[in-house]
Image (cartoon, rainbow, N blue to C red):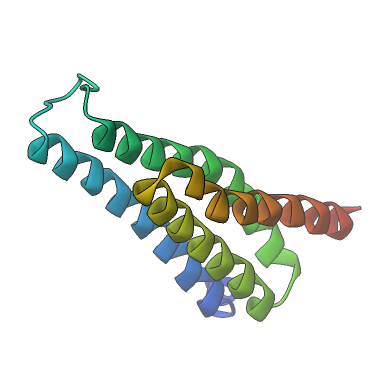
Length: 130
């Protein structure tokens, strides 16, 4: 197992950064709660808290799909391809967050690529295991 993990350093780096991004989003929600005076568990009336919360939750929802699909993908394909997918997903989630924060309709600039990456992972995982 360790030998396999050593063989995919770029993919693991992208995975760790994706996990870090979700953690950053959770801190962002907490900072917004403090800034806009809305202690948990209240959602508050402030739109920025609601947007930060949606960014975090939506990223968690997609990460639940991404993680097992990505794990299967890196088991069958080279590290370079795994890293490409992992870093692409990371960039898409950052674009999603920044777009959503700026103006909610802009979230699609990162949401659509995120969904496309999930679909790509499903297709290539099925190809690999069939």
